Image (tube, rainbow, N blue to C red; front, side):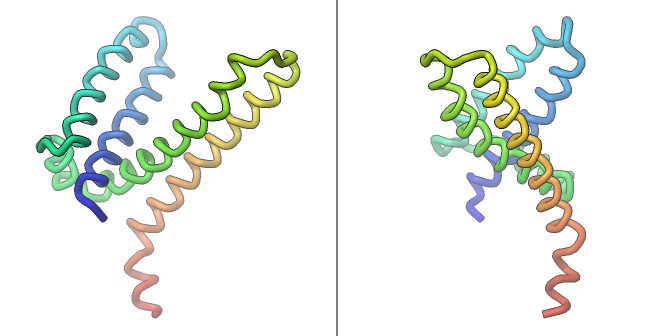
Length: 137
């Protein structure tokens, strides 16, 4: 696995988890989401363009099992983000009935929930069962 990809996915996983928690709290905390988004975007582009950011590597070294979870959440989260943009973006510009918009929203929400569950299952498999699977073979 490329080190840059790993750092970007861990950073994305951290962002997705914290933004989810901020979204649950709501109220005043929703103002923090804008600040947190800016704090996420700056290191994201720094890593993307080859600059070294020490935070993701230190976090991975300090919390190796938790960073595996963040990696998978970030990886699947980026895929779901692109999927959501590709599906929901065009629906803003075309005329759809309310019922159709509801079905599309429910479908996207279902795919997002399945994606998060898949990320958690893959991370759990990697953290706890990877060694047992290698021993069997």
